[in-house]
Length: 251
Length: 251
Image (tube, rainbow over the protein chains, first blue to last red):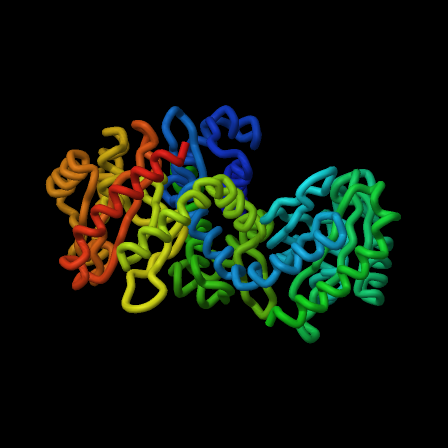
């Protein structure tokens, strides 16, 4: 790679680093962007100019910046693409929460990550909280591994390759052999369970949703670690029932 | 500006041009991206590599690419930020559609554009169709001009400056003096109407939604041009009523 293309790519990466800084942040000042990205202020200002012209960031007055109209547009277009699926998911998630007493969510694979498309949480008590749109690396926890168990071998290799296997908590499995064994077991059982891998204090149980032989996504139940023993049997039954139901409804 | 920074910015612009190409598109092949952006294939491939590493695009198999998990995340976080407002908007939009027989939508300013946050369309017949998340330049049509009429003078100057005033249809007003006069009139009346400026065959009527003296957004009604004369009086009454209602409910 020439020096020029290295510089070019570095600029593109820095621009996306700035965009990432806005995740869940609302309005940010130059100082906030500097703190969140570590980029120099002059570099941030130069990139912001381009991000503004492209409609991905806008100045909101008082020296603050917010995400621009293009993010609205692209985010909405993705939501629209999945909205028929989401409307099928909602009642199944609600039933799963009512019957299990823990949080239920549905995720789809997206590159080497999985994204939460829809969730339903119990209305009170100590509960596992998950955000729609939240992304996690595929190697992490029960949800990622039931997805990997039903994906093409090349995609599994890519997800487990190189420097991509990092830990979110001390309990995240990062040993490649252990991950492969866990994926094999998830494939054999079409079910997986994990403890504290994404959130230290929570268990997760997941089943793949298959339409015929095609992987659609993963249905998961998650709750406080201390609830696991009392709930695991009922949770497993609910997952099997609702995953089968969703597979028959999602084309 | 040095040659180096020009090159850098050009790379960032090209990266966002690629992202823009995915608006409403689903999966795209390299050839589609080339056709939509005019960038060379080698340049697209190099940029896609960086977009993938950053999580903004992912390869979806069969030589196709789709938007990545980061767009989900940012799009969802924006939707979440506005969801309390959207839940207040829905019943007002439904009432406006039931009483007027035409499409109702609510937009917010975002930089030099306005973005549709929520809409409601009549359930049958010939109707104006609008997409949530859709962005338009602020100078275009009744909606943009009731927003500009209630924005700071600097923001109005910016929206009307330089090469930004372009036409969407032959009827789009692009004369600066005419636009200023139209904005002044929208400020005096807190109401505006336009014919065929965003969509050749549709009229639009809009009123600002103000919470105290603070601009929250614009409420609009739009329908086929031939319906205008018969509906304009009832539409104006509905806009005034629902804009006042929304202003009192949105903090």
